[in-house]
Picture 1 (cartoon, helix red, strand yellow):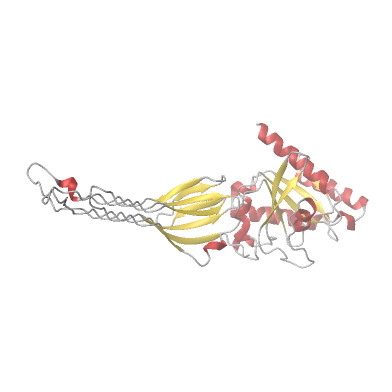
Picture 2 (cartoon, rainbow, N blue to C red):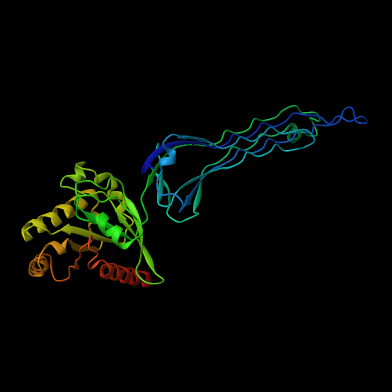
Length: 338
């Protein structure tokens, strides 16, 4: 299934049914009064969030949605049948924009949350409504009102507690594979990850959190270079970012440049996102000596400050991954307690 995180759709609420012009006609009442009923209301269009979806791909081919029209009023004072509402399910984390006003209409970030996005039109009035002391046999009716129409942009921002940030081949997918049941594609070439993926991490017997992997970023990503820019938005809902760095066969200076390059890309994309809590994760430590690992860590602390959280792991060998996830889980628990 293709991952699609932005689409445009047209939604039409149902039109109200016309009022009915009718007169009561019975065997013993050949010339009865007006009895035309009102038209039924048109159906609404409702967007509803569900945890059962994680992409907007179902909108790839269907882009026009219509709720049901209300039916015409009937004789014997009967109101027409109202049109059925149309409920459109979208993934949790879907942001809904009005294309014409560019206004954010709703952010459906909770399962089963919903919004009436377009209201159905009211039914027209039957001729019974126009009976008066001066007009005992009105024929006048009104037509039903057209339902609302909107052109919408749906933008999905995945819901995850933890976001992984790093260059291609930093080991992000390997980490997700090691700590969750998700199985993202892993290979030894750049841009193996083409779409964001989510994994659930159980860090204790009764607690878990969601971790998100996005395609690797390279210098110039904020200006459209590489694959990562279009997916950076999926980090916006995370509570902590793990910036992963491949430390194999690199000098400390090269590692610092890589870290700062990606931080600058975050700042260019979203200054608020660059201020998110961020831990450094040094990956592939199984390929370097313990002495080199300690030296790199000490140099990074000297450069970025002693308050910088730095963790060393081997995602492929699952070395240090469990301990890292426990630390992340504890940090998230503390946030929940505030």
